[in-house]
Image 1: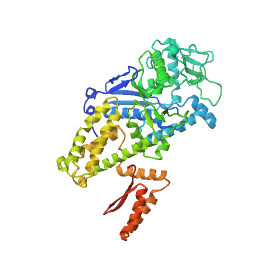
Image 2: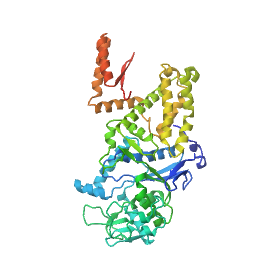
Image 3: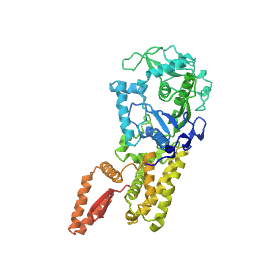
Image 4: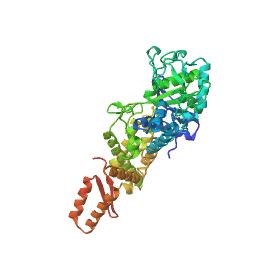
Length: 505
């Protein structure tokens, strides 16, 4: 595995990273509380249903952020929460006739399976609201004691936005323009329409989760959970807070207000937000009924195809999704694995010039790959630019691989390419499989989607092999044409015939 410069020295040798900060509205150098250490908190899912590919956009963006920072030598403490106490969870559980916490536990497990399927690593900590009620009650108590919160006549506890002169600094919204930013209807018990719930009084139903507090039995509001859990794992002030662009207001604005008013300290130094994934120019959401679940996509293609589709756009950009784009991503991934197969099967020590222009190109692109890759990723984690660099290399390796002598002569030339594949696997999470394992997964999933099986194709290939052995060329050709029409590419060699699925023209 590639060794980053920071691994060979102290924090003073760390590469400078620049990030776009939603708070300052500009790209700025990454600043940390402790040199060489980075605390990251990312808002996770409200777990009442299966994760769709819009949710995964945020998970993917910050998976790559954490991967790259670790690769560059930073010590990362990465926290991504699960919201397992919420109105939507209670409603769904009531519909299903089950406990809200049982329902959320089921969907947490499903979420972890889905994210693993697209190569998203588990965070260092994945706290649940239900496990941090004590932290939440403590923070609410500090907010109320300092005059920033109040218990209303209905028993709820609210944060007073008028008590915070800095309210609106993240979103740029003015108090006079604010509408209530809660997940429930405006309550007349509020002193200001923008006030938001810190603690919700228990309604008396046994099916509704509730805990004791100084303000009576109840449960947390939506926003307070993240402030309390971030504080528990990262302290009053930490380095990066992330989430989807839709969370800037009200969720993240409210987090800042309640945290800074409660603790008296700055909250997060850098605020990073990913753009929406859209389907037919609309944000993907359950309320619109236009969702694509991760687990459904994984039945069709290897998880890295979806991952590559995300990587082709900068994390802050909107990401249009359709089946054609997913198909194009699979074609690109297939080319990448073909190049990896060439790079790792090549032997010999021929010099680049001995392999002509393809050899010189592959050597030149491989030699500068790491430097170009780091420059792209160090500049606000620009995966779109990094993927362009990746495919410069892929094209050069595949061009060299068109020469039959490459595998016997090109091992030395392709050594930098092999290091590049290790780097992209570590940071981007693509090209992580053995090429044959990838080709086999494509076979299985593509055929299954067509209602066919690997065994069916291999029987036809065996029949073609028997026809060839019997010198029945007409039958062999007929079977090959059938296979070709089914997008099956047959590769004959003295050792026998192998095959792959064709995934593009």
